[in-house]
Length: 453
RNA sequence: GGAGAGAUGGCCGAGUGGUCGAAGGCGCUCCCCUGCUAAGGGAGUAUAGGCUCAAAAAGCUUAUCGAGGGUUCGAAUCCCUCUCUCUCCGCCA
Image 1: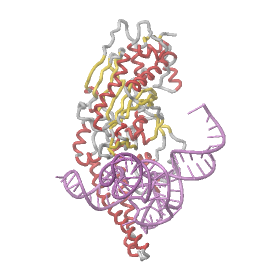
Image 2 (image 1 turned 60 degrees about the vertical axis):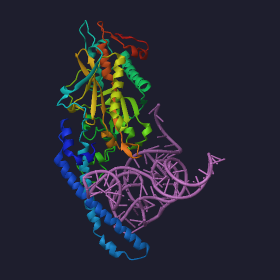
Image 3 (image 1 turned 120 degrees about the vertical axis):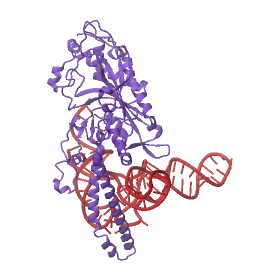
Image 4 (image 1 turned 30 degrees about the horizontal axis):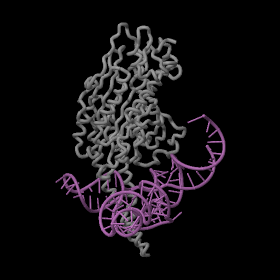
């Protein structure tokens, strides 16, 4: 969420920044709501002040045993007026909040301005793609020929976009996440976390997935909906909230996490951290669930885009002055994994048009896939600045002893399934076997090659 | 799932309708006293908003005692709903 002060002081500036990422800020609606809000809030608070002082006088009179009838008469009509103004104010503020919750973060000054992903900028490259003297296969062909990857059966079990791995491949998949988690906790100073895979709407609102991206999530309804217990809508109020807002306010459903960023970052929701507990660095290995609405037709083959995949996620909660330093550091931590695995990659600075909703700046790490003859995203590292912290009320006590919003960063370190794909494709041999990267062999009981059993 | 108890400021804890944003204590900060230590004395110590203001400072003001709603001129206190915590029983990995 953006700082509303920023929008009040210079909405034009904010709108221009948002326009670079292809977002049209609803300026007219915002200003209308703001004018109305200001009027109503002033008016409502005036009424409240009057009521409070009258009530105090009544109290004083009664304790002295005097008659308070004349004061009572004075405020007789205040109640209704206040009720109306208050409800209307609530309605306006809810609308304003609703608007604000849908506005993406503004890009940092260093982010390249662009209209599409084609304008992302390459920052650096690591490693040299291997040249093959035989025709390379993609991971599906390799895995199926090894008899360790079985999409038809996964489809039977669940449907499209799920995968089934067995034997040494399943083990390699597990080895990867262990290796990543070990590296980040033992070498990069992250605290390992075990987190819930089902989270509430409040948490998803905190990191920015809700309310705007509900369609991308898997929702797990509770048996009792709460909806049925509400009175009929006309009885709620004449100023009833919008239907979406109403639904949100009683949403006690749980959602499967689309990334561990949600539970990890929300650890600090509604907290005031001490300055000396920063930076707070967390790593977790979790499954991630995405319904990927709107992605139909893209990456339908193989395990690049799945409803369920595993990821080791890095989250840093930092002092606002340190967050860009931290972004470089965190991106480096993710890169380190690819370096240890000897997988060639490049780092891209996403342009304004390609960044996610909550990010102020994002680096994507793309790994080389020989069969596709291109680099494909395997990690995304973002500085969200105070955007999520503002939604989460995540603060720390600053040098002056005042609570101040934190900055949050997150990055994949790495997406396990896609890393597995990269290993299968980059380490394939002409006999159909796949070499196992050195660093993983000790996690594989010394095994150095995947072969057909 | 059944039965019961509870939720107040950083912590403990008082408060069942009237200057209660909330006694008291602990903790913390500053000051005084003190040869050191110990003890003592004094002051301060929630958060988020709004308005005035070019801004800062300041002032005025609103809200918040688990959450939401209700009763009332007035609610931490009364009523309703929900959430969470604890104890016991059942079930379960």
